[in-house]
Length: 307
Image (cartoon, rainbow, N blue to C red; front, side):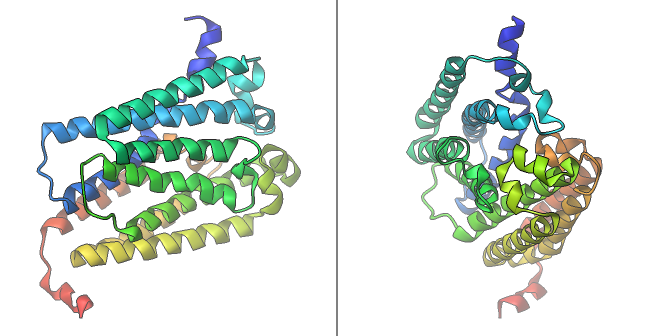
């Protein structure tokens, strides 16, 4: 493969496909509430969903890097991206966007059905609204975080619709997932702002930074985390009272993530690299085990919270 093509392949950010794991909680939720029997066909549907969503995500990444290359040169790390340093053919970029988007939509429609397909279309539309003029939601105060993090809620819905489920999805968990994503994005903005350490330069990189400061970013992150825990708490208590014991540890997860944002060149700026944070990964594994145990253990005295 020639050097020229490598830069086009690189901007697909295949290493970011790990983010599609955010689909799995929605999938597990549908599996549990829909009372589906675990089977090979269900695993195949999950793999189809992950692959289809990865194609849509890559389509969004392609236009993101292309339309941001004039701004990325002001970022200490992103200025090293191939599109910032080398000339590219805009026609090839848009052809890649079309092809990747089409692959994702076709896989979704023929592999998983209309509801999943509609969510894929929405994810693709959000990529346009976030990156393309005259919308460029990423440049708008507060809207930048909320519009990017809504992809979290869409991924949850994608996970839900991987299965042929006919139950109405609980809105509380969707809102909780959205607000959780908003917390992650606000903390990411905070870490970027601290790293650049120059408001003027930060504003050249991301226009919304001209309205932000560290206090405002931290305050907004705190607000999003509280909203997320509130909505997720409603969902957990409504469907299984034992899961109330998970909530303090979910709070701990938010605090842990917030803590590592203070590190120099923190991994929260690049969520696809978070697997390298061993402490965070161990904590997440513990949380998953705790959740699994409480899903299968009856604790009668917790019924006092239902009275």
